Image (cartoon, rainbow, N blue to C red; front, side, top):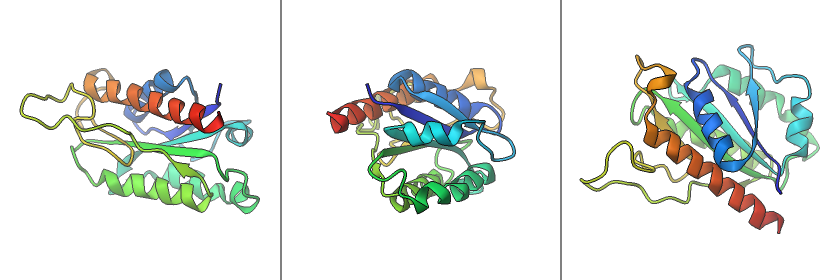
Length: 184
């Protein structure tokens, strides 16, 4: 079985809930970036041992959080020795609006993965974009490059859109399938 690590920052708990759903779908381990932008003890070793790394950050002001950026900058040490080369990578983001420039965050994560020589995995899902579809359908926001979710700014973690969390679990399954196929 492939080792998948979901490394993420969550400012208010919403991105953490998405990370947990991705972990449920993938069977992966969660690795939280703290409020100061640091990994816990053993975090870098956990990433070194992973076959696939899923990046997660809220979208703030059109990009990843500063805490995620600090983590990304600190990844220059594994970059220097090509420690993540040929690992699988994927990414997700959450913000309050349906668009909110989430693609900028995904592109940041994609660029990070490419600088590390990683192989990117998208959602592999068609969007639910017909009149009959609702926000509770899979991939209602239409993410291809990575998982995108939206939580209204005044919504609690418990009020997150069930369809977004189901999409996160399906995305996790996609990463796990890709990791198994790639390892096989």
